[in-house]
Every structure is written in C-alpha cells, then in structure tokens.
Image (tube, rainbow, N blue to C red):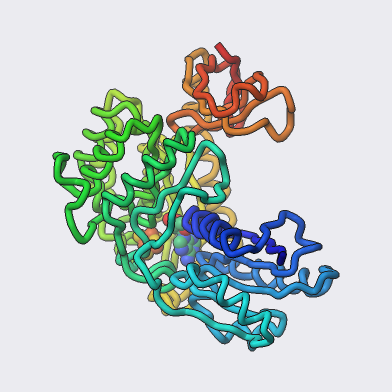
Length: 441
Ligand code: 5AD
Ligand code: SF4
C-alpha cells in the first residue's frame, strides 16, 4: 500500500480540497500518513496569495529532496500548481507531477502515471463533474467541524489579488446538494459547519433547487435559511464580500439561532483612493453602513476583517484613514497583511513604492490599533457564559479542552475528554491576548 503525506498551505478552500483528496486517495487504496519520512508520495497543496506563501513551496521541495530518505514522488497541487503549470518542472527538478485546482478529482491518476515512470505529469484541466464529492467518508480536519464549499473561484478581480487567476470564475453549488451534504454531516455527528468560498455572499446557483420554499432577497440569504432549517447545531460562513453584503443576511442571523453571530468582512483599506485603486467596488461610507447594520443586530455579532498595508501609492494620510476606520469598526479581530506584489495582477503594473520598512512600521502600527479593540472585545466577555464547542484537548494542558464560541473566539476550559464534541456552557474567567479562559458550568 502506497503511503501519501499531504501538507496544506493557505486558505480553508485548500484545507477542504486536501480533505477531499485524502478521502479520494484512501478510497483508491492509498494510505494517508502523518509521517513524512516514510512516505512514498509527498503532496504539497500550495498557496500563492502572497509571495512568502509561494516561496514556501520551493523551500519544502528542497527539504524533502535533501532529507527524506524514502526518496518519495513529489506532487504539487493548489494555486501555485494552477498558475505555474509546467514551468514548475523547469524551476525545480524534484517535482514529479503538477495538479491544478480544478483537477484534484484526478489526483490518483496523476500519481499512478508518475509511478509508471511517466514523470512530469501535468493536469490543469477542468473538473470532470461539478463538485463530484461525497462527504460521507471525508477525512476531515476535525470530527465536529466541517467545511462545506458553496462557491468556488472569484469574479471580483481586486487589482492586487491572484485568486481569480488561480481559482477561476465563480461557480456555485446548487442548494439541494449543499443541504444533502449538511444533513449527512449532521448524521455523522458534526456540530458546526462552515459554508466556505472566496465570496460566499455572491452565491448564485444555476437553479432554485433547494431554495424554493425560503424567502430572502438574495440567493445567499435564502441558502442561509435553508441550511438553518436542517437544524444542524451551528452554521458559520466565510468570507463575505462587502459590496454584496445586505440587510437580508443580518435578518437571517437574527431569525435563526443556529446561524452564528460572526461576520468576516474584509475591508482591506480605510482610504477611498486606495480602495478605488484596489478596484474593490465599495467605498468607506458603504462599508460603514454595512457595519452599522451588523452592529445593530440583537445577536451581538462579532466582526472580523482583512487589511492590507502598503498598497502601491498608499500615503501616510491614506494609512491614517485605515487606522481611523479600524477604530470606528472596533473589530473583534483582524488579519493584517503587508502588500505583496503578485505577477500577472493589475497592481503588479503599479510601482511598489511603499518601502519594506514603511510596510513593517504600518503593519505594527495598525496591529496596535486592532489589538486594542480585540482586547476590549475579549474583556467584555469575562463573567459571561458562552457556548463553546469542545473540539480538542488543549495543546498545552491535557486537562483542558479547547474550542470556539459561536462568535469564533478560541476558549480554553478545564474539562475531560468525555466532553469532546459537546457544546459546553463555559463561564469566562479571564481574557488572554487572543483567547479566553473559562470554567465548565
Ligand atoms: N498582498 C497582500 N495581501 C493580499 N491578500 C490578497 N492578495 C494579497 C496581496 N497581493 C489578502 C487580502 C485577502 C486575504 C485573503 O489575503 O487581505 O482578503
Ligand atoms: Fe481576491 Fe478580491 Fe476575489 Fe477576495 S474578492 S479573492 S481579494 S479578487
């Protein structure tokens, strides 16, 4: 039995693809292993959203070639594979096969071909079927939490972003299929599902199947209501696109307790000038109005975002506007990135004129602003009782369990293994830098 070691970089879509690849390979007689050293095949599921992420691939291939005594076949999948295609073989002689983002369903064939000595196997073709995946025996990253892709690809073409090139155009899965998957996951004991996609709220299926009964202004809010009706305990969704974020989504959350009180709404910059150059399709005023709607909900919805510092032409004044926006929004947490030029994107034609040092300073400065609102948000939860899904034994303390609240905060609490998989009532006692500490009630 051939052993496969699979390593995943990047976003949840990659994690989800990896889970499906592992499931497929096991069904074809391969064995998935967590031991790299004894693997016959090493698969690297790559990310290209920033330069650093892309470089990791080349570092890893070098390490595997130099230190792995089993001399495995090396395969590259994911966004770098899709973008670079066969040039990867020239760049790095150690790579044996390359599988694009739409060809993951044929990974077993690629491995077989590589084994038959047909080295340098390349498959960048389209999916044979629309999401022809059965979730029934999926190897998941968690027993209790599952990712369910609802839309793949991106049509937005923000000028800095490589995703529309690596993942192609938006393609939505029909709702009846999503519902079928959620019901199956629920039957398997999954407590929380994450509906995932680059822009979940741009969801637009080919037909109404599965949504007919549900009211709502946009197909996405109808989908939220349809998924809520499955009675799965918790539903989260990420990532949302500001331009397509409307009141109907907040209404759906307000009316369905199992839709969790968390929205991830990347804003990227607080300057209208920069947003325009990024071609985001929204202004700061639009964004603030959406935030106001979210904050006016009785569900106490937590709000997280993505921010980029040092986009070409960003002045100190523009950056100050980003800090002002972060203060206004009081994010519960945020991912901050230094702008990274991606060849082939429109922004790569602009001069990358904010120096490395300036990017670093702005990153730290903005991090400080966000840290304040994050700290405030965590402190406000001390003394309250939160519902926490006990997902795993804590990494540091074996007598503690760790999981997420409905609003996506990590909570650690003393409890034993028998509570794993339960949604526990936890009284919060202390706020740490990024997490909460509590006691089981
Ligand atoms: N440079 C820096 N950050 C980027 N992101 C996407 N492309 C780039 C880039 N070229 C960030 C955005 C996006 C998140 C997933 O990654 O903030 O929301
Ligand atoms: Fe990239 Fe913009 Fe699409 Fe998000 S919406 S994946 S940032 S192009």
